[in-house]
Length: 194
Length: 295
Image (cartoon, rainbow over all chains, first blue to last red; front, side, top):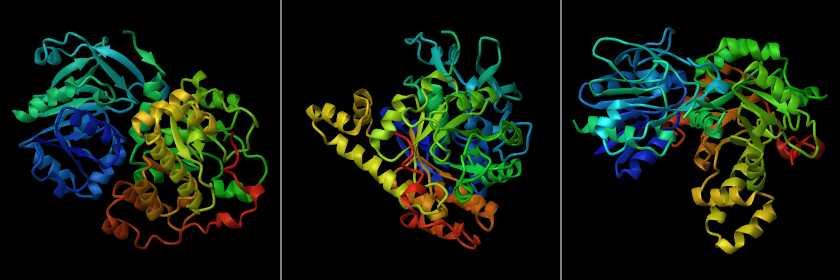
């Protein structure tokens, strides 16, 4: 199995490191031809405006949309924004997931935070591990609403949605690549295998 | 676990999200929009770019909060601002208005000739400049969550940024080959906290994100710093002191992403108009050098 990490900008090296610890081969993707023969794609955290602009300039939008028809894709933070249909402002998006996202929903950097959340799909996936998931939110977006066949996977104690899935597409507004817990990465790999 | 804010993980984490990107100096909200549209990952809000600070002389201080707030309103990307070395009250003011990162910067006139700000005291994260590994680890010891080379700001001459990046990265390579019994003596020699020396040796890199800054002016400058091994770049005067800032900004962003693809670098470097004029660092009198500020 080989997983691509969109490496236009952001914390792609952190995703690679987690996957390599799991024995998975990775490839940095900066140009459309680099999507060839990959089994799945991760869009990392970063600045969504930068990633979107570079994706547009280097003609990656359509090839990634095409890739999504047959492969799993996971976006963390900026990646989740990029996967969404609507962010209530004009910026390049893949528009693949029926989710509406609010950028910087918690405010500026001083409001960035860490918290433990319950993610039931991870418990079903890994019943041995009963720990909550330690989630890191950095100038994070919120998933305002899930529509169509998209469903919420996790929310904060106040009910606001921070992870969603639609078929083989996964979006998290936090950063599992910044913590040692690899359950989200393994869950994504299970979507890749299906 | 209750929600925790301002942990070192989230301070350092924002810098991790900026990796592979370009942080641009801007002096107006119009500049900030140009920078954001060109693909900047963050902007540094200030009253004068370093080239003008050099030109005008006088005491360089924190910018007017009104200007910084206008820039914060104009863009959705993170906004950084500079405080003078050791000026913890300027830092308190910047934290109060809600900037996303503070640069405790040698580009401004130092406010304290012995001590830097205790950056652990703040909720907002700090980036600091360095010329070598010891200086980088002292700043991290004081709480910096991101490091950059000092370079020589406002010159358009990349030579000092190269010197500082090679120094830090070369010292880390040597540290990795050092036997354990030499590490305490080495920490003492470079004036760095022992624990951070151990951590750096184990990681094979600085424990926080490390950008290049100070004198970068072209797409090739940015790509060269990336190939040397930094995580991203700051471009100060190099963009808005050039002939066509929007075009140059966009080209430097693309060059930072595709830093190891000479064909793309050639393509983005075409027809950029005049670069900033610049000043050769070796021709600048010692007293005018900025990088020596900080201890």
